[in-house]
Length: 593
Ligand code: ADP
Ligand code: MG
Ligand code: MG
Image (cartoon, rainbow, N blue to C red):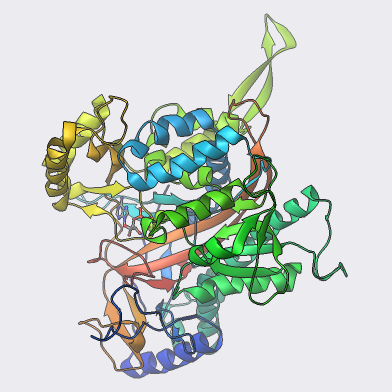
């Protein structure tokens, strides 16, 4: 994926223009729910050290956002959107391919990574039991950075490279929809916003469909469950008896500051689809959730949850995880038991454990190996049948051809990815990581930001892992089957993507969002003029799918898939990581150039 030059950015604004825009923007943000819960109060010496303090629930601050949209070449934006359906199919195919998951997760990272090992155990148990619920729902986000080769004569073309593909808790769609509306509002209501010579015209600001698409995905899962249970077409809008309709369950984190991003999905489900949802944490579910055939081997087990707002337990159609993607969500065995119970239930899971595992960074690396994409896309029915002449007679033989262009487009979005095992490629990767670490990031199988190891820290981390391998009893990890798996095998090595330089923006953070030394302006909103920002573009999609047959041949049947809607997150180049929730970046939206 490549394109042409990007204009100088942002358009220059005077101090008073910036102040006026800032005031309009923060008011818009607060009055349209572009908000977070404030930071929790700092712990006092008398507060208990066992539980971290929760944020106040009676006030909000605006989420961090950019004052102007950031430029993205139109061609790259459209390309990212056009390949999303292929990615959706690809990951649907992976989640239904037992052999693939066994080789890539069970036989590899689950042996050295405790978190992956726990997920793998649940996957195996449910797979062996053979759940009656064959459907999986994925709400996906594929993330990209612009890439420009440096050095040599002049600069190279700008392309787009994939950072990662998220299969669980893909967040910020609703809030980014709000930022997009904010930028469109500013473009309509301020003339000097357009100092960018017409670039900031509304026609160059693509409308964000993320909120609609993500809520439609959840609704598709819920409606599929209703059909399975003979309730098709029923909703609270269709006059169906109120109390006995199933609910969607949002599994959330305790003290979630980004709760409103989730709430908007809940409200869309109710307003547009007549579907009700409840929110509970793993800790609450441990007490409140049960299966209809508790303790039995019965395959079809309805999930019931009691909720303080209702007299009777509620039947759950769909479990939507906005928690459970990292070890911090499972402080004790109890949370793992709860996850297993949810997974074993007849409710549809978004995502299933299989789909969560499919989103592992290790899978991303394996996809870049030869022939893998073709195999998985074939399983997803992504080939065309062509009648070809055989022995001079027309229409005799049918040749199955890949939609080669699709494979190529997906492959072009990959950056260099390496395993950290003892294969030939793994040994090459180790050498690169030790000797040329400046060009790489080392990634564990983790989600949620803040886990990666960058540049010169890589050799240090690898040496430490090697020492641990040597000192731990027998130098082997977890497998217990005599195979020697080194700690580094739980990681992948990825070449660093190099976003083009010289694009700036004005990043706005609420005064209540935590201290930052180089922030200008005064409370309540503070802004940073950054002359060199990096924007990460995410494209959303959903897929409702099941294995084609009971035979374990990996073929997948996609019942419903839709993609579109975006997230743009922008940060100063100096920060390696880009998570909004962890405070490094702001929510942005693209202006197409
Ligand atoms: P997570 O699942 O924790 O979000 P990511 O793979 O998205 O993990 O990495 C976190 C952040 O690190 C990204 O948002 C991006 O800013 C940065 N990053 C990750 N991979 C690369 C890469 N290959 N090149 C440059 N930056 C990267
Ligand atoms: Mg990420
Ligand atoms: Mg991720």
